[in-house]
Amino acid sequence: MSAEPQAGAAPLLSLRGVRKSFGAGADRKVVLDGVDLDVTAGSCVVVVGSSGSGKSTLLRVVDLLEDVDDGQVLLDGEDVADPWVDADAVRARLAMVFQQYNLFPHLRVLDNVTLAPRVVHGLGRADAEEAAMAMLERVGLADKARAYPDQLSGGQQQRAAIARALVNGPELLLLDEVTSALDPELVGEVLDLLLSLRTEGVGGRPTTMLVATHEMGFARDVADEVVFLHDGRVHERGTPAQVLGDPRRERTREFLRRLR
Image 1 (cartoon, rainbow, N blue to C red):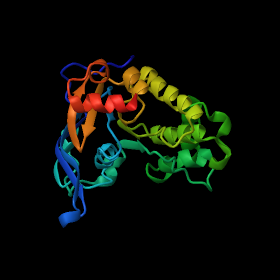
Image 2: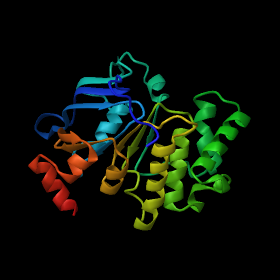
Image 3: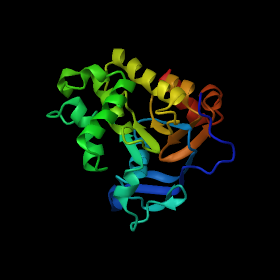
């Protein structure tokens, strides 16, 4: 990797005792149950676990798309889960790529990628398009800039969504099962892109990632740390070799056996 997290560096993102539930009374379901997590600038933390373990909710909490019931979400030491925090200003520092591509179907790829720079960050059209074309070149889609989303394959649409997320230069990239909606033959092109973002970064700057995925090969090859979630709790964390190759907890071993 070209970007190793600095030893002893303060985390860019810290979750402390984060709890989140949905429903009320007898129907209340606890989805995150006291989660602690750190992501250091320049690192890649991969969260794995069964469906319903809380992975997607965890990312949505970080992006302030869900309020927490308790705990802290610290970005550079500031508790951004505080209701007095400007959520839009926080989200401007983050970018999230979802399972579904969420591209606007009536806009060309170039217009999808320039929308946030122009509307949120106030860039003029020419500057926004210059930045967007550079990012589309980075993800291998410069020749599709004038196409509409339904003219692209699923893998190309997801790469366009990643370009849209990266064009604003986020401090932290959140990736939520970004290959789960793809046909198997298209998964590799998206994973190859994410691997290149880790090894090469964007504009000479390392890409910090928090990734929820079921792709164990990607986790093994790319992650600095793997976190195993079960029933909304962190049951095991460590290097990919330790968690995926020699897990200490029986629940982790059961999860990996089911995958195999």
